[in-house]
Structure formats: structure tokens, C-alpha cells
Image: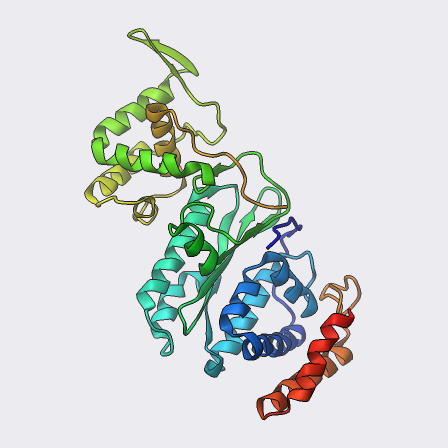
Length: 368
């Protein structure tokens, strides 16, 4: 799977109803055809590819370069497949408040087994992309799709209010678990963004495994009060200081901040100490452990062990019916509706044994 860069400028507002209703129909027909031919796991795999996902947004009439592709495609797929449970694919979450309601939605779905597993995955992936990749993009959209076989993908998006761009993060269980079995070392199938950022703290980079282990050891051996004293001491000094013949050099990385809330940090350190920390995931999922607490711990761990956190940005750098804003041309409603009808007819006939039309439809793919 090739991971590329594509611009996602922030577009506010909602998709017009006339377009969204058509989006739901055509995405449902495309999705159920793939499921019927190849299964739900294959459809999830395709959705986890940022470029394929972008193509679905384009072919369904949403502007190719818009951040709204993420929210509308996810919402459309969630709505149509949750209303058609016979296909065995279910979506949870969404934009803003809907994303926060993800655990509740999973709990209420009668078709999904192992609910605790998917709630755990939902929380962990959100924490990682918001807190462990500190790239300036704050999550505002979170969706998880699961099937009856236990496969899952997560698609979530963050916004950067300074540069007015969005960044989309894609996860797939086959990549996240099969390759490293940890969730915490280079777990994405792709991250799609406008550009690479210069000021990034990436705690899940492939170079960070030793760093993560050091941080766990340090937390298990050190008392919260002592950790806080060290942080205060470091922040009060300049870039190079001497004490008792030893030279301490502060890292020059931009991710270090001096405006820590020491009371909150002290409270969070006690939370970590009270919790049994066996893995980096335990740190991430501790309540209250956010961006700044992780930055402070990075600073300490780097100075104690001499192993730096990564500052590499993990991001890698359609025209079927037009786009909602008139680019590359206005929505062609007549052709859109004809295509939905034709696609639905072909698929419905294939379900009752007419395989000839499906085989013809397959051959079309090789003509373009």
C-alpha cells in the first residue's frame, strides 16, 4: 500500500441533503458489491488505504481536496450499513460529539460481539493520534468500523487551526496487530495530510521502542515528587548547566514547553504511580495523561537514559459526477441517479443468481 500526500484544507458546514442522500446510495452499492465478492475484511482493508478512501469521496461527489470527505464518507457508510445488518459491517462514532459517543454506540449495537475489545481499540487509537503524535492537529472526528469476524479499522481526523488544514489517520487490524502486535510502534496504514510538519513529537515511531521501555522503567522506579523536582530543576536552567562536575545538556527539540501546570502534572504523576504500568499503552490510557504530561516525561526520560523521542512526522505526502462546490464541475444529478440505479440493479440481480451481469461489470474495470 503506497502512502502519499494530499491536501485536505478545512471546509466547514455540512454536505447538502440532495448530495448526501446520493452519496449514501452509491457508497452502499459499491460497498455491498465488494462485500459480496470479496468479504467485509477486504472492504475494510480498502477503506484503510487513504488514497482509496479519498477516491470514494471523489466518486460520490464530494470535493476531492476537502476535509469534509472524511466526515461525509464515514457518516454515509455508517448509516447505510448499520441499517442493513445482513452485510455484517457496522460503524460507530463520527464528528465532534458523535465521536465521544463511540463507546455507548458500540454497547448498544446488538450484532457486535466482544464489545469491550472494540471500545478499548477506539479509546487507544484516539489517544495515540491526539497525544502521541503531537503534530499540531487536534482530533475532531473519530470513526471505527468493525465486522462480525472481529476485523476493524479506525478513521479519524484532526484539524490545525493555525494553517487551516486537516490530517486524516487510518488504522487496520491486519497492519496494526500483525506487524508489531503492540499498537504503539508505527501502527498506521497511512496518514494523509497537506504537508509534513517541522515541530512534531512522535512517540510511536519505529525508533521509539527503546524510548518507550525506558519510560516504563523510570516510572516504576521513581517517586512522583522526585520526578516533579527534576522537571522543575531542568526547566529553571539554561540549555547547558554544570553541577558537581557533571554537565547536563537540555535537548534542543521544539516539543519541550516551559508552561507546564505543575499541580496538574503532580496529580497525573500520582495517577501513573498508583496504576500498574506494564506497557506504553497503560501510560497512554491513564485518565488525564495528555499532551503536556507526555512531553514532560519525554524530557526526563531523555535526560536520564540519553534516548531521544522521535521528532519525525509520520505523515506521507475524481471526477465522476463533479463536486459539491462546483469543482471540477457542478454535480451531474441525472447521471448520478442513473449510475446508482444501474449499479443497484446489477447487484440485486447477482444476488438471485444472475452472475452474467456481475462478470460484465468486472470486465469494465479493465477497460479504464
